[in-house]
Amino acid sequence: MNFSTFKKWLLDHLEIKNRQKSICIWYLIFLMLSTRKHTIQEAAKFSGLHKSQFSRWLKNHNGVAVYNLDELSKRQAKQFYSLIDRSKDSLLPWNIFLLIDSTLHRRSTRHTDNAKRFNHGKGFVIGHQWTNVVLVINGSLIPLTPIPFYTKKYCRENKITYRTENDAVVKYIRNLNLENYVGPHLSHEVMVLADSGYDDKKIQKAIQNKKWAYVIALKKSRSVRSEKSHETVPLSKGWSKVELFFKDHHRVKWVTVQVPSGDLNKKRMEFRLRQITAYLRYVGKVQLICSEYKKRPKGRRKYLACNDLKATPRQILIAYRLRWKIEIFHKEVKMFLGFQEVASKHFKSISSHVHWVYCAYILLRALPSPRDNPINTIGEKQKYVQTIVDGKERTRIIQLLTQINGVKRYKDELRSAMQAV
Image (tube, rainbow, N blue to C red; front, side):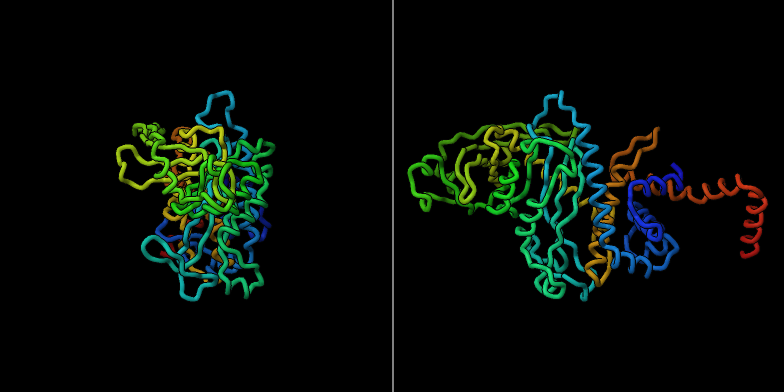
């Protein structure tokens, strides 16, 4: 693929006004390349445009980035959903997986808008939080429009209703229409996966109202009670923490389960788990799973809740392990695409950059590989884009030589360049 074909391929996947095409294409190509820093200054050096053009474009055209990410997500989701082979026996009864997780974007300057101090691991991070919602269909990950966290100060200044992260996720789930992404589908095909940060009755009820299934990790202090207690004890009594609940039901035996590791070079992973059907407080009847690595019994235990009562414990465990794909996604956009390398005071500019990074991720995944060398990883695709960009000058010379008086004009160009030296 030569450079002109590559540019045309990008424009065919985007909807941009003519006056914005040049700066948008150059910024996207820059994000798709492997470089030390994906900053506005480096984008200006790469493209030959002034950095103020990129600053104004990111600040004033946030809606263009949001719209193009939404359209790219819909196109990719429909394509992958149509490729599902339903004739084969699948390990899981679900075909559409919705993964929810947040990531932090460190601030680039002390004077940036909408920055806040977030707890992170053993310390804290000052910056911005993005709650990402991604689709996994047929093994491929598609990022949807992310949910930004707005501070109370930013909400007051911009007349925005303040919402906590979990409240924003509830609103997002209620408004999400998956038919726009995958077309007609059955509600029981959808599975939502999230870690214990989203162990919230409002989120779980919002998912149940959509008639979707979910597997969500529970906090150790989440209140549950057995089926027997639910039938005999008043609603306000008989609740216990999920950790103590499994200790009280120690007669339930551990079962060893083998799970595919996801790596062809590694053997299957072995877990041991216990399963009890019980009631989750303020939510309803669920399957509770207590799982841990078989060879590391003193490691951290996971407590999972699944509202699909027909699913087997092994299927629940395999499904929850798919949640790790969103962690890999966070790693790739930060390592390869410069997710947190934009330096801007205005939050709209940061938001535009994040949306264009996700667009670059989708386009890199969708970029056709060379016929003689199939490539799949983000790093390999970036190298391929680099070879296309490096061949830009050769393509220009070939095009010039095929024009009328092209040889003469190319000789004049070489002569003037030699005189300048």
